[in-house]
Image 1 (cartoon, rainbow, N blue to C red):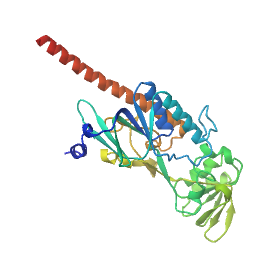
Image 2: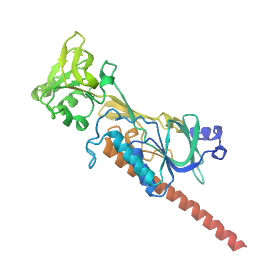
Image 3: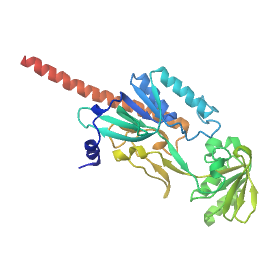
Length: 345
């Protein structure tokens, strides 16, 4: 007996639910989810977007590298997206989806979407765009300054700290690559070796590019008003003045809600190094579970806002085509039955 069969037997049938059914439930109201909902609304699908109100970039001041929206505050971009989705009949529900369960493999799929254990929504298809969680090293100042003076992506934040003193906290094997990348935006880059080891070739690369290496473990990132970085304090007490600190967080897909379907995150490797975990999917966002699609950071950990929105569009188009195929198959079956009965009348 498969996992899906087990859940089908133990869970209540959709007919026993009092909830309204939607063509598609989109879980996650960020760029990927809203983009998908917009496409589906324009395709005349009934769409419900369920969002917990915890976007990854909530602490960032602006969205960057989004053509036509450069410098837009994240909340403003999401508000505009929600208004556009609503304009095509899309609906919204505030809450956290705790589980998704599937019923039916034959005539038509249906999914039960559990919202906080208090409400169940029925959907013909599900698109998960819940994003990821940045898991930071346990050092004072990192979490408090995250998204302000503590940064992760030079393409997202490099211009804003150009020519300023930047510190790179070495927490993994990709730290040298990080430091060399940030060197593009500033001539004053310091690599805090912390607990990492450097090979001879790496040390030579850093020296050739003028990146200073500071030995010794880091005790904390010093912050000023509003989360602004003022320096990096070493275990011995020495403080190295810095205006920004960059650190590679482990990126973990928000995917617990998919566990009942047998969809669990797998490691994303860069070379031999695991940098996070994601839900595997094909190029259109289709997962190994029929009827379940994913888009954005839940499957593409390195996607910024614009690629995430594009992925939502792609997944929504594939999802709509999947529904059209199901509807066509059912219509053909009904058409054949009608002709058989008509011929026997």
